[in-house]
Length: 587
View 1 (spheres, one colour):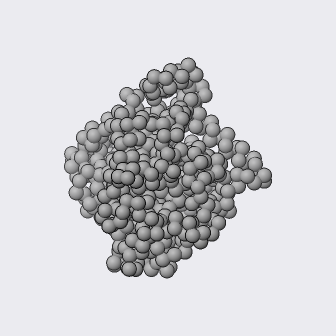
View 2 (spheres, helix red, strand yellow; view 1 turned 120 degrees about the vertical axis):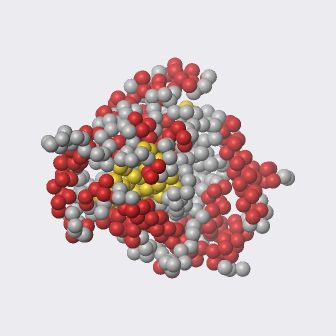
View 3 (cartoon, one colour; view 1 turned 90 degrees about the vertical axis):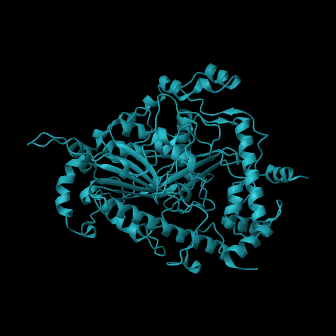
């Protein structure tokens, strides 16, 4: 048996591609006629392109899509008054909560003047327009809310803690997906990845966006902004990872704001690779593995503790790079005129987190720092999707939101998001489909492939996540407890329902509990309606796309196993021994 056959044998039961019947999802009630869907299935998928969908009017049902930048008008009215309080004082002296922890709703009457007054204000003397603010996104890769300002006492994040004290800190930002490329594709367009059909991770045969849809970089360019995307070390092009065809030169003017013309406002992104795996040891501020707090679905083992500690040490590298970025802004004299967003592209890079739809995979920090200490140190627990970030960003620049944008301006007084929608599809070579809806109190998850394990074979996970290998060994040995075993089972339930107030780790599935029947039916109906109106994914993907993903995964797996001096068919026990030596020095 050759290496290719061994690999396919290894993955066949975990990740079967050949047994999927063609299913066309998103046959959108009130969007496309059944005849069009049949035509699409029998010929190709062009009949359901987004421009045609737009013409059929599905976006018009979402009233928030007509929001404009002027919806931030309250922000700028309030700014002038508050700046007098904060000028020259420490942020901590004025930590008056803007948001109620019970309701999660901000004092919105104080918010919406920010753009209208500051960006369009005309002085009485010379009638000149006020200079627009610069806007900076600082984006970390695979970051959970494991920061000092979010309550983690082990990790040392002084720069981010200081930023939080000067910002509005948001507790409930969730990304639409828990993996880079579809998450970033949605972020830069303000649209759900499944609506644009950019939901499969790292599509190889990419298509251009429809003519009616463009990334928000175009809106900023048209408004006269200098648009950049750079690495946090300022050495080159920042991470894009979009699932549509676009070059850096088409989307961006440069890699750093210092390349712009004098006086030109900028919209910049600074990409931080950390804490994406592989993790990096912090010899200056090491974290004791014995002191980390593991979630209950993890076994208490030296491997899982060491891996978690290394993650937290890598988070500390995020903090250092944030400090350098902000120091650079200040050195350039730009800090006082720049609105700063800090957030992650998804949650933690851990088992049952990244790629999945539990909060640990989708919940990431969000801080928004406004000039002049506006609302510094306040906290919000309102629900925010990462596709809402571009909507708010455009609004703060007083740029009208495109009609196609599905994200909401979360700093608008009109925003009152009740539900968040998240999705999982193919991740590298691993075919899957999961959809979820989250309210403040409950999360409902729908699993479409119940016959497959959560942990079906995935090269990235199998080779980079030591705790996954540990749990596979312990599962076979029957030494995991029932909570830990559930995620390792050979099947999964069709539905999951969690009470997030009483079960923040999402380990007690209430879908079959009669007491929660009404919540189950309510959230199921909400998700089904959302899928019908927004989800235009098609399964299976083109066979060339799937074959490319499989072959790429095979090549990667072979390379890694050779580097580790392990056979292609190494047992999980053999792989665990490699990790014991690598992480713990055990021979």
